[in-house]
Image (tube, rainbow, N blue to C red; front, side, top):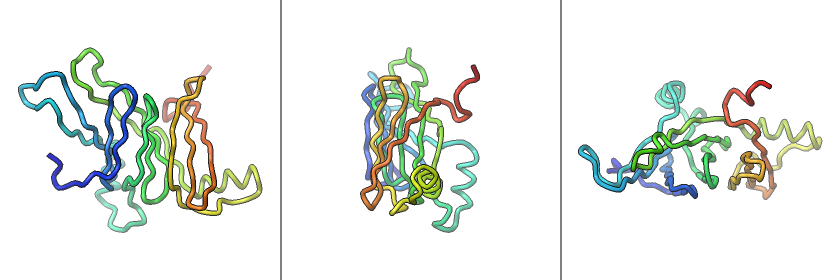
Length: 177
């Protein structure tokens, strides 16, 4: 049951998770199991909501300037989902299996990081003394490097190509030595 939502992005991971977006701030997951359960069918749609602050922000947002509706969605082969919202923020979500011993595929999703076009442009200016030509992020291509870290290749509306290497798997950063 989709409650009238029209999904425009579908992206799977190599380990079997299927994520969808419909222009809402939340991610959806198509969850499946080997057999129907007592209270659910073999296939069902789960809405992942990212914490209390995102719920309050989305509830109170009456203007499009504070919206976080996901418009581009792309999965890494495992462990990560990258989304671009209508404010052109690149949002990185960590995913892990809720119960790997169960016969059902369902993920726990946590927002790890978000970076705005202004922050990207500022960092680019520090490195190259040039700002981004476009504040619109058009595409994101996540992958996992040989070192196990997430890499996100992003393309702006002006065709600029950006590479982000993420070295921490937690929102708080890398663990202390």
